[in-house]
Length: 339
Image (spheres, rainbow, N blue to C red):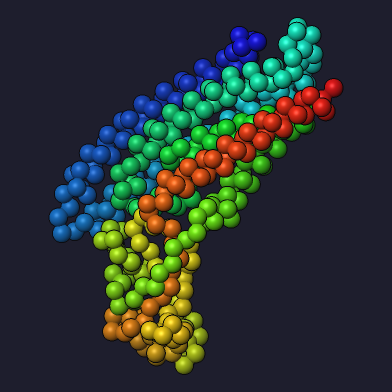
């Protein structure tokens, strides 16, 4: 059974490994070049480090976006082109009946297929994720934005869980729909929907965010320094209204943290919302200059930088649990519903 499964997927496996080898060579070459650039510019920037950081990020920004998008897309492609046809193709051609008549039980048939092909899927995705995480580490160090959805989804261990989920989702879709092309379309829709839902709806609630009040007189300015010195900086200052009811809302950022609260209104030392001149909201007043000479503050909710790996493990566990549930569903459907 294992030999048969290998025979059925060997072309896809060879193509995937060859593509991985090409990508690995390109990442190795550009990654070493990136590190040389980082050492010669950011590493020895002297007194103009912000300009050096901006130039470094600008130089590799487009390439970084492409590489990160690749490692996010690969799990979905694995689910579409490996998972969906895995069972649907057998059901379309009727070859499953021949196998079941050779003393191979349905459960064993399914388990071998999922385990054998799934192992290749995880190996390819894991190697690619490790390469991209190594490749992008200088950029991540400069940007300090590892919680950003695009960056978070394309680094560390979560791509492995995405691949497991996409693969089992494709297999489940093929088993239920019994047609390869519709199953591939259903897998694509499901994978994209989950990839949008989890970062923006579910991930912010993995852990209760920490809350603090930041004195606006301590801000580093606008726009903020990427380094931040470990301190809070203003990311955006917005003005609304006129006269005594005019209001200023401030969005804060801190290197490496994930701010979940968005922009918040300024408040006085007693915690009351400050408006008009008292809240630095009159148009003739420079807000940043006014903040420096006031006791105003703003409340911020955030996920600290040291929770990054905790979030990685939580999301990995979530998607692996979904993959396990889908595999269990496949086994149940195969025994109870498929005739």
